[in-house]
Length: 256
Figure (cartoon, rainbow, N blue to C red):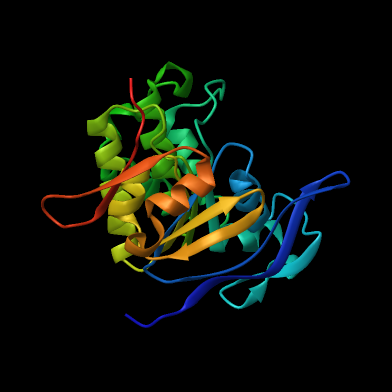
């Protein structure tokens, strides 16, 4: 697969009010999964919001498939990047099908919109939920519906904020498997994660974010080391290896 930069962020600064929260540069290629790891308040969600165009840039520029983010209309931007927020709210007065259909807005209206929304629900195993009110769904069901929405949106770049937070292992595994499939199809994923094991297993590259700056960036084997994780989280870690694939499995070294 050709290495195509679907995202380039050059010396980008983001913040709120007078306060600068993060400053960074980043490139993301087609087919690549990059996990963003850091303590609460480090600026991870701020980065996603800035790259999605939901937060104005204080400095630098973001390029989506070579086009400056600042020159794109909201609809053009939504054809290039999709954002899956952490724990979607429960108060949306729509059915699951209507939530997914909204993902077609950047491309529609089109006669194919309803069919593509249904196919997206089917792909995530949630077609049976189509007529259910979104607020009535469980946490895992809502996450699947929101994943179907960004699949229906058909963007080359996916920004994900803890896509499997608070979910049981079976649902988490299914969501991560689907996301890896999307990477294999050529999409790029930037994913905020607190689960260090999944970050190791899923990622081509891991970025450690501390106080708004990149502490380290590279393959999981190079970055998920106890000394770096201890510097990042200010807590002790030990490192095991996965018995099947040898991937690093960092665990907090906490005595009870």
